[in-house]
Image (cartoon, rainbow, N blue to C red; front, side, top):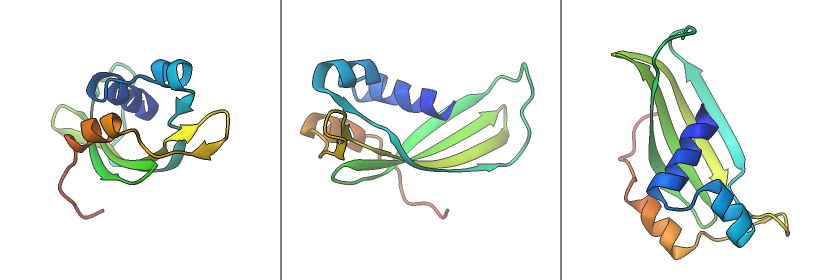
Length: 113
């Protein structure tokens, strides 16, 4: 679920889905770190809503706050960091300006962790 919401974010909000990144520019956004806290159980058949906000944009990384709810009940919260990476070189790479600008629109205010 966490990867899926990030993939939708890059495709819909940034305009560069993972398939376009890899096949078009040889870049990817592998997970660098993930920290999840589960607040309530979810069961098969529950309708879950996931939201994503950008906490920080670095030179070659971005950190996201992801929240999963069902109705008014919070199910889990997650802090996730991805690295913008050159697949062939196996190294991090600076975000292209257009991707950075698109992510900036989704920056959220700092909140206590």
